[in-house]
Image (cartoon, rainbow, N blue to C red; front, top):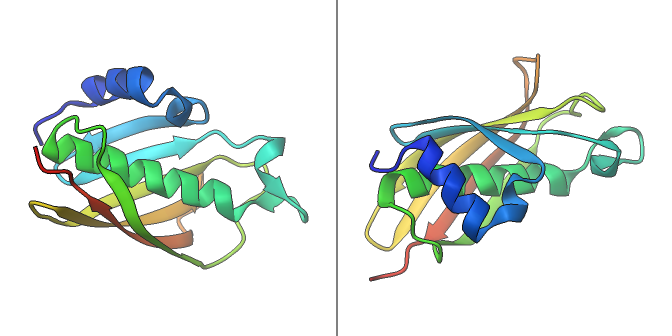
Length: 137
């Protein structure tokens, strides 16, 4: 890990402030990141459960944070693929947490997986695998 959590938070506030409007970084470690999405009424779909786009947003930001911690603050590192499997209904109105682990960080691509949970539950609600392109300097 070459970038600390506080450095990533400052970078996101400057370069990508909307990413922290609903999400907060709970932990950044070696090839890992844990984020929390603060769920409100706008994030709920019919039936009172957290929407798929909200879970995808959280997973995408978790991957970005974990990758930035490993490669440095490279703003134009971008998502090239995001695959999500919805496993069960999240608890409606409850925050969700993303636990990300990077699988491989190469020169041009980084691949990671994210497990999403309703806060307070050990049962995953979604599993995500994503790939990011790393620009060459």
